[in-house]
Image (cartoon, rainbow, N blue to C red):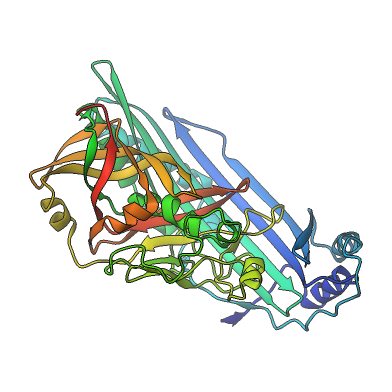
Length: 464
């Protein structure tokens, strides 16, 4: 922990919080933000106009008797904040509450930034996406279209609340993406690859393999066969394979869904939901990972929260408000897209712990099955846990070996039955980059896992 400067001086924050609670409330909060972003896209060898953005603003929140009063302003000036506080306070209609004295602002530093993105010229970033584009095309003449993109953001936040919390955080993220399209004999397929994290430009400076990998995926699918149908073993890939855990399990563990009774995991705390060798975490403090921050957007320090321990469900993911309702400790999962949005319980980086097998071990144990490397979207019904996911990159497993690529595969199942069907976990944990949508907000979320094998799950395909 280190002393840190904030966007609003602590004495100003104290006056704003006092005005905010002039008519009562269990919790008053001031959230301030300054953000800068850049996005570059090269599409079909043409560089599009760079998208530069910046904004600065703040929001205030009162929580009283289970109701939330919320407002924001595109300013961090004391006058604007006091006016907004007075407006919100008028809705509370109770006796004044004196906020606790603010602690000294503190900031945790979780991520190394060797090369600040702002220190690299736009010309050098354009050269990077051009190299990614050409690396993809170099994989074969069948690669007919490439779209490569680079994005960076730097975000400073400061949070103060009436419990005396005073925290700030500086967040730098970079991300490189490539989508390649391959065509042969009238058949067209595409492949996508990304790399990103909480880091500086050094993370992606030489990552032309992002283009190579995207093109290789597209080329492989040109030779894909129709996916099989029926119940069979499935080995789910590491990295983006974790989308299945994120969607089918993680959302059901967010405290708002649990407290509304809208989650299949409600009431299962302390119950066995997976074999004893299965452990899973949500970890917002994982250094360098895409979904990590020093603190969440309510000022709670991020942490590694065990959600499944040796097969037993042991934790939910809390923001401040839901933690109070449950008489639990907040877990650092109160996240928001920007100061224009109220915080919600959200995942950070969610993943299965490493096992002791190798990916080859898991595949070797399958006579006939599917190797689902990554997913291209899906649907989950949180209240029942039923899901269907499309497999964007998948292969047949025949007699313990990965053979032909497949197209048109889906996985259909129920999250509790899928957890119970896990019969092997490898030791090759990888965290991939994604964006998670919820309540009209999008936030960076890391998805990941080692290779995981499900003993049996329904594969929807077109070939018996």
